[in-house]
Length: 343
Image (cartoon, rainbow, N blue to C red):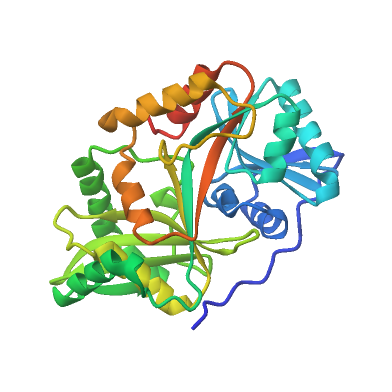
């Protein structure tokens, strides 16, 4: 069956003047649903972002970190208002003495930023899978099928946590998994670009699946509804125990695919992988830094295993993800990696 989509919140925020900002989650969600062109714009409503609105026709969403802004989703507006909205936002940043850096933006925003003299350097890639009518058949899915069969054979079961009461009862076990996962990976918890565990709750826009083995909770994945040109579900927060049965995470994803029948799963951003040649104004220094950080393994968020997992699903798209900025390249990249706790 398809999971019902909640009605669009069309009561968009109305600024008292020509422009202003808001942190109202409902209004940000409504704006994203109406105007977003990038699936990961949803992070703004999930993680408590802010929205700059110009003349009731254009919006730009961001997170604050120090004196900088991490802008997510590009310019969210109708085509004819894209340029004026971006100009108004940049003017506002200058007045407020804030430095904007852009991530997860669509091509229209990338072109506009390039025209304004921004450097646009690749930081990694994101992956999406369109699984309409997919039966996981063919040679490409052999690895996934083997893992699914192994997990089922060993008795792993998957539960969708459907109500808040059930979720709250499981929170202590879920938190134990969080701590164990971070410890065993030697990993950092990425901030801003995945949901914060404290904000998670099951609702129409958030699906939570948990995996069990021998009466123990061993893993979970939080999926968040996305908007934009390819709406679907964002494979958001995922954690597992050290002794988790091989194939468990694949079994959770497959459970989602069976429940919603068709659509797109956005596996999200992985830093410092699948670096390609950019057609935008870019820095040679940035590419050298990215390659160096990728080679350091444990110093930066470990991305290799994450990429391997995502690529095993034979994604329909591998999308380069960029950082757009003005000024010093090293400063901009280090700011981004620190703001997202990747470094």
